[in-house]
Image 1: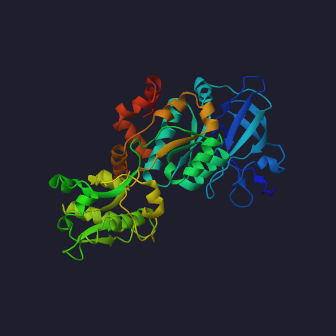
Image 2: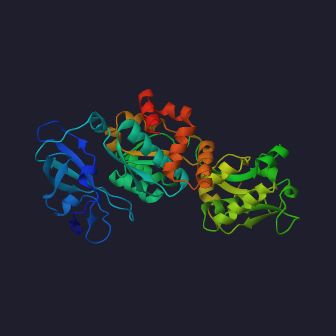
Image 3: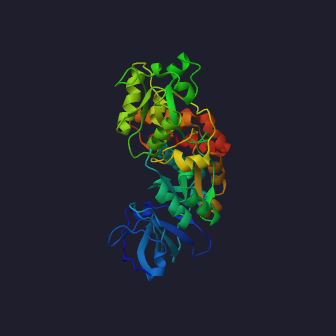
Length: 418
């Protein structure tokens, strides 16, 4: 078994600022102390450190307010994190002398305890993580911590190790086998589908174009009218704007263009070169009220700023054809197909679900639409706002929606915290 470096006893805040979770009302109360310890060499990223020969030792003397003192004996138990993030360690601590006084709010927090929430590296997931943190802390008394995440490492860690506790916006369609492993293995529980209408990809046109051309509803309809979408390079042809090379959506758009006969219909496929190039092409067209059609997806801040209409495909989604050719760049004979709606769900560790109590009711109900998220993250972009700012903005502007996710008692606590 691989050995890991011994830990330095480094705590990055005064101990009297830590929140303790009440576990036992006996004279020698059991507590759980969350701390941050760094390894001697590099970032610690491994399960079950305690199994690698690390001895139990007295680490610290606690000074809790006026006169409350106790020595802590702690065994280190690992909580894995995706590679490249700070390791958080749980210390199973036994308090050797009592004298700590607990308020009613601290006792309430014990029901929920410590919870880690993964914030993925895109806006909608960031604001969802901060929203959950705010509501779980202010409404349910949890001690919540946001950790950095991304789809593959976060879902893999949850499926294998049950950490982090919550992935608010998990694109489960992108990692179906990993999610299945976590669910069937008893490490993960599925909560609400946070995007109630799913994550959407496809071809879009500005709403003003759709309003002016009510018969323009599908890709086959589009390919009847190249004159409505003149190419910037050749006005005699229509143009469909694609994403940059390397995106899966770019591959699918190229295959659908081929499958529906775009070139034969007098259209050309425009490579925008980058995400900024794609966004810029939409913004330029919209500001000038010019026609535009191309690939995009939701939820995104751009679709919150510019009202767009997604074209239909005129056919049903065929999973076998999608796997055979629609999503394969070098497949020569794609057939017309529809873009599936991606399943985006909240995943929760089984260990947290078992102890969460009423907080789990919230996670089972909390859901919003693409339109709601688009508007919110557009506000965040325009105001250079953080995920925390976005969460508070949502709570202030959408009270009727979020009150349906929680009890009246919790709603009052959240409102008071705002």
